[in-house]
Length: 278
Image (cartoon, rainbow, N blue to C red; front, side, top):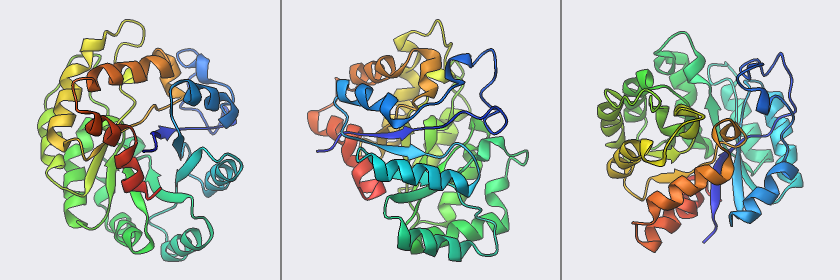
C-alpha cells in the first residue's frame, strides 16, 4: 500500500502574491519551498508520494504545479484552482481532464471570501455540478463558521467527491470544540465527504502545544467520518511554523497506534489512493 501525504505546497515566494505569509509571525516560511526540500523529509518518514495543493487563485499556479509533478514522480497528484463561476468553466475542465492526468481536483480559498455563503452562490454551484462529469474532486477550505454551509453544498451533489481540508480549522488554541463539533458531525453524515487530518498544528498554540491538545478534535473526526473517510496530510511547509513535519506526523502516529494495522494503512494512504484515483 502506498503511503501518501495528501496535502503539501510548493511556492517560489512572492511578497505580493503571497501576502498571507506575514512578515514577522511567518518569517520562517517567507522563502521558496520546492520538491527538493520535501523529498528527504518524505523519505525519512516512509512516505511514497504527495498531493500538491494550490496556494493562489490563478491558473498560472496550475501550470507551475503540474510542471513540478511532471519532474518529480513522488508528486502523485495536483489540486489546482479554476474559476468555477466562469462562463467557460466546462471548457476549462475538459482541457485539464484531456491534457493533465495528474490534475486530480480543485480548490477555492473559501475561508478568505467575505461572503460566508460564497459556496452556495448559484454560479459557484453550477461549477461544482460539472466536476464529477470530468472526474475531478473538490477540496473544501473553510473555517468552523462555514461548516454548516458545506453540509448544504455536499448534500446537493451526492455523486461529487469532497474532502474537508485541515479539519475545517477548529479553534484548538482556544480549546473550543462547539459548535464545530456539532456541525462536523452533521457534515460527516454525507458519505461523499472525507476529511484531511492536516493543518492542526497551526490551529494550536504554535510554541506551547501539547499532544493531548489535539485528542478531542481527532476523536471527533475519526468517530464521525470513520476510518474509511479520513486521510493524512502534513500541510508542509506551513507546519514548519508550529514544530515541523516530523512532529506533526508523530502526533498522528501516536494517536493511530490504538487502531488496527489495516485502519492505519487506510489513513496513511489507502483512502487517498481511492479518493484521488492515484
